[in-house]
Amino acid sequence: MARLVAGFGSSHSIMLVCQREDWQHGFKQVDPKNPHYFDRQGNPTTYAQLLAGAPAEAEAMVTEEKMGERYDRVEAAMDELRERIRAARLDVLLVVGDDQTELFRTTNNPAFAIYYGDTIRNAKRDEGASDGWYKKARMARQEPDADRDYPVDSQLARWLIRELCDRDFDIAAMDGLERGQFEGHAFSFIHRRYLQDVELPIVPVIINTFDPPNQPTPRRCVQLGAALRELIASYPADLRVGVLASGGLSHFVVDEALDESIIDAIRAKDTAYLASLDPRQLQAGSSEIRNWLIAVEALQGLDLEWVSYTPGYRSPALTGTGLCFAAWKTLA
Image (tube, rainbow, N blue to C red; front, top):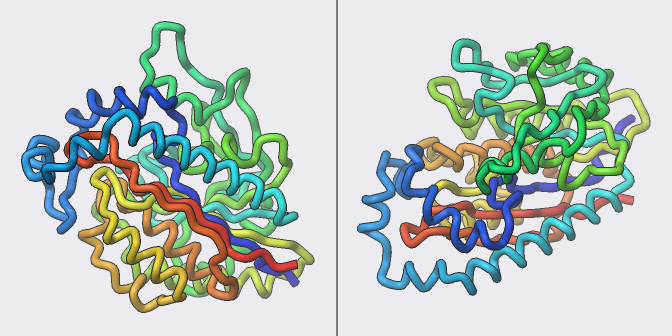
C-alpha cells in the first residue's frame, strides 16, 4: 500500500519571486492600488483606511534595512524547504493549491478539482525588456525558454477522484488543459522554486479559495484532508507520498495573531480549532489558508518538525503577506 511519509507547506506570494529592491521600494507604490483589502475582523477596507489606522511604529517596520532582513530570511527558508522536499525521496507529491481565474472562470468555478492528465503544462514567460518589476516577478513563476510539461501521477489522481466521489465529495475532474491554458501560480511556483531538475510527479488538488460564492468552509476542507489521508493509505501501490500546501498565510493585510494561532494549532494537531475558523477571516489572499487546512488534516499522522514564519510587511499600512514555510518529520 501507499504510505504518506512527508508533508510541506509554502507560501507562494509574489514577494517570493521579487528582488530585494522590489521589497524595499516597489510594493509601497503598488499596494495603494490593491482593491482586495479586508481588515483583521473580515470587513472590507481600503489602503487609505489601513494607513490611517496603522500604529505609530509602522514606518519603522518597513525601512529598507527591515525589508532586506525579511527578504534574506525567506530566501533562506525556501532553500531549506527545497532541500527537505528532495531529501524525502518521494514517488509522488500531492500539491494543494488555489486557482484564481487561471484554469477556471467565475462562469464555471468548482469548489474542488483534481487534475489527472499525464502531464501539466507551465507557460513560457511572456515578457519584454521594457516590462516593469511587477510583471517580471509574475513571469518568474513561468518557464524561461519554452513551455514545459511536468509529470503527473495520473493513475493516483484518477483513483482519488473516483474514491472521493464515492465519499460524497463533488470533485471536478480535469484530464488535460485547453489550448492556451497553463497551470496556475499555486502550482507553477512550486515547480519553479522547489522541483526544478527533479522528475517528481505531482497530483494537483485545486481549491476555489478566492472567489465567492462557493468557497468551501474550513470544516469541509478538514473533511477533505481526512479523506485524502485515508485514501492514500488504502491506495494499492507501493508509493512514498507527500502532501504540500501552497499559499497563505494571511494577506493582503498581515495578521500575525491569526497566523500564529494557525501554526500553534498545526503543531498541536488541533483539528477542532482549524475546522472552526471563521470564513470571514479567510478572504482575499488569506483565503489560501484553506489549502493548509486540507494538507494539515491529511498529515495528522506526522509531526510538524520545522517552521519558518516571517510577517512580510511591505508598506506603512502594514499590508503584505504572512510568509510561512513548514515541513513535517519525514518517515523512513
